[in-house]
Amino acid sequence: MFLALKEMRYSKLRYSLIVGIMFLIGLVVFLLSGLADGLSQEFRQTVDDWNAKEIVLSDDANNILAASQLKLDDVKDISSNEKAPLSLYSGAIGKKDNKVNISLFGTNDDAFFLPSVTSGESFKKDNEVIISQNLADKGFKINDTITVGSNDLKVKVVGIVPSTSYIATPVMYSNIKTVTEIKFGEDMVKTTDNYPINAVLSNDSDTTLSNDSLTKLSTQKFIDNLPGYTEQSLTLDSMIYVLFVIASAVIGIFMYVITLQKTAIFGVMKVQGINSWFISKSILAQSFLVGVFGVLLSGLATYGLSMVLPDAMPFAINITQWAIYGVILVIVSTIGGLFSIVTVNKVDPINAIGG
Image (cartoon, rainbow, N blue to C red; front, side):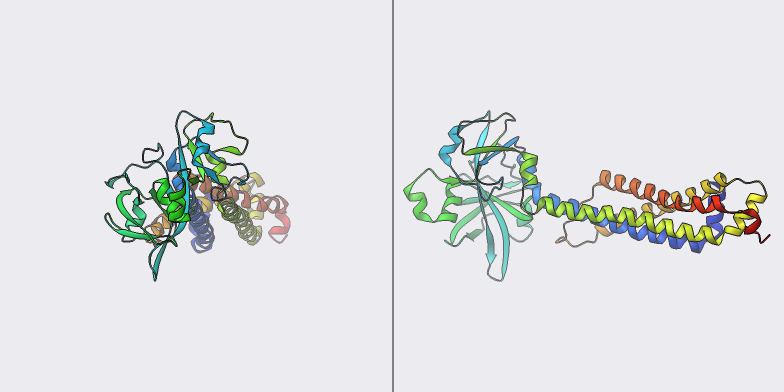
């Protein structure tokens, strides 16, 4: 380590360039990780907030909430300690030139998964809604009247809940009847009270179904089947994994070139009785230090950038994930130095010093 540090201090510019490259690779890794976590959170946050153990859908829905078609009467075919129906409407609200995409969920006003209201009160009557804080941040507020759906149904905002999102859209909650009228029109709610729903949420990990047309999913399996969720995660994770390989290759190439430039020096060292393993340890130590310095600087820079990124960019800091990626980057950087060990072992002292 002494030899490695002494040489790095002597050749500051050379090793600063290598640390700079490692810094840039680490910066991209941490930015991609933050984006991956941010997007993942925007897709699944509402589902996590439900704290449901299992989710019941129609058997032909291919595990997709929007494709599931149930009726309120189907709730009777589900045995659970605690359960609640759920309907979904995806649409947009706001003025014509300033629309905001939303996910509106309908359920009972006493459903176990409803979030606690931070301002105002929960919905109690038809055509009342509660909105998430990220919608409030866009200018919607309590007592506002919002027009929703092609039927132009007007709903009143009565409460605000903590920020949450479903498939990257802000969330609203109302009762089943209101959501049904928004989706299917006034005639539907006048002709029947067996309203269509999309799912039933259960707070029981051993939900029993007495209808073959129903199927149950764990929360994690439901999340994995969210449209685009798995594909998005795999794409960003694959990019990060490729960067690990690039980091190892880049550090390996630079250390190899530096090793070739110091062949004569290594020859003199061997003549003086210094063995190849001692020299190799110095190269590995340099690769390790390059990785450590690059990762620390890139981690700090990414944390600083996260403070100034626009709110529209989904970015989440996961310190545990960053620590794991940082360790991997240091390891692959050290592995890159292994390529130079073969060269050190092949150095002939006589040829190296021109004998």
